[in-house]
Length: 485
Image 1 (tube, rainbow, N blue to C red):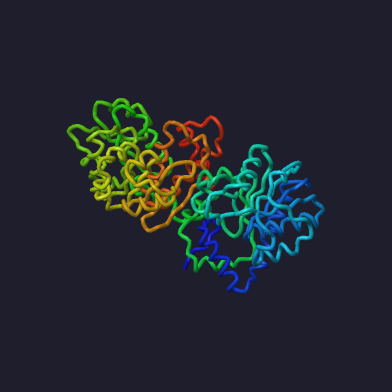
Image 2 (cartoon, rainbow, N blue to C red):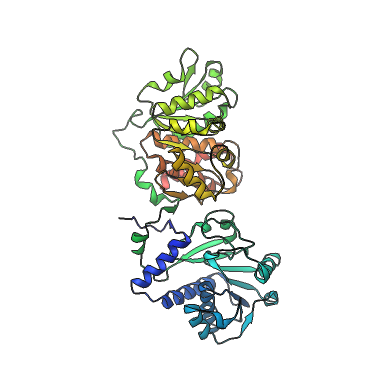
């Protein structure tokens, strides 16, 4: 049975099915539209005091929602102007029914409607737009933005693709977006996420049980989705029972492995060993005293990870784009231990990514940023589709980094991370993330859940810390967030 959670995300098609299933269950579609418009009205009043409002209605159901909002605003004594794209006689179904209930004037859509208005309600298209915006609609959207008018968007800012977050010709900058039942993908994927402003999800009477038939595979990354898998500490624990991480260390950018090692320890890994060339031994030993060092020289990387208690491996941070990095990556994957492949260990396979994928047999997480991803995978589609296809092609969990990090599992599940602030754009941040994920996998957390938990914790620490964040701050503030969880 499908686990029903508030974090589930719906595609445009799935939202249409949710509406249809609600009607089939006995909720009239006209009631759904009435509830939608009323919920927008109530949310609007929570954010703004009485002022001049223009409601811009499109020719479909989003426009029908707009007619309901205008009616409630008018009844509450707000000065309302309503503009319609197209002719009122061409409206159909529930939109037509609600247009008939509107007692005010219906103006043709025109830029002049924005004159002297203080708030715009965008009820033009919502999530289901299938073409680029143009003509008078684009002119109005451009004017909303150029005049910096406050805007409430119904469902999604018109012009934002509900499935990809891409902008189709233009879209208004909303301060508030009110959507229904569940968020859509476009609320979290950039650039749509940035155009939505605050997103509020309202209940319009769709039964939760419809999700059992829809079975969504996409979710917003939230603790409720992975908290049951988070390693728990027990009085019977000892350092070996909590996993032993081996991190491949570089000879020049030594800080990367040290940051990753500290992150893995902060998340509970019992032991962490950095394996690197013997001539940089002193540099690594001068770091955290709780982290061990394994010199590579007479000992090989195979030797360093051969102990069965060394159950998780991280390769890539600061390793350099060398044949040795390729060798260490293949060695880790061949051992079928829990493995995270990051940074240089991804780039080194740009000339032959299939050879990397062929070695993936055990629990593996790939953590590319957009540039590294493009070197390994087909990058022709939207970010979510690209990540999902990459996971299926490689057989690994793929964490495609960014402000809208997408985490994809080969079985088709996808989580979108939404709590990462801009302050994470700092040197070493990605090394910390890789270490967090490896530390969780060392303690037995499944790869997908470990990637989701690592990404969320990474973002939450940064969000709570605020301005001035550097990578070291992330590891130091992990305990506070973990304690709250």
